[in-house]
Picture 1 (cartoon, rainbow, N blue to C red):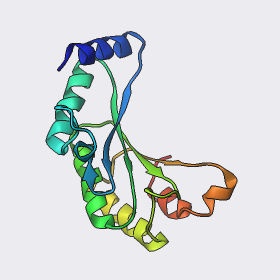
Picture 2 (tube, rainbow, N blue to C red):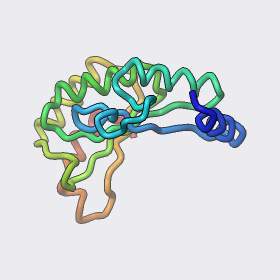
Picture 3 (cartoon, helix red, strand yellow):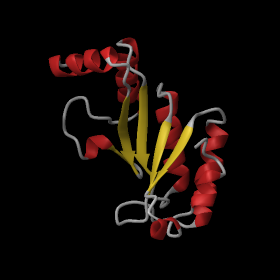
Length: 148
């Protein structure tokens, strides 16, 4: 890892802080958007980062944007991230352009597949909590399989 990455890990550990790193957006790994050598290109790179930060005393978590266009593939990618060593996965669920586009049924499919693959994983649904936004996302369907 780079000197700046090492400094970041040391600083986070000294202050008892963790990392929540975005791993994917829909069915695209973040390396599509981030051309740096350590960009998340899939589960192996996620595992490298998880091991690095955890070994440095920094709890490592991940987050992803779920879109609901290909819920089975998105659930498999989420499962792969969890298997790579993250402590938890935050699902960014928003009704805006570039975020959730699926149906409530797609949310059920995603949740069922993710829990089939990762029954004990810690899953957090993160939403745009403005009251006029809540009705635009399948919150009840995500609540059914999320820990928080």
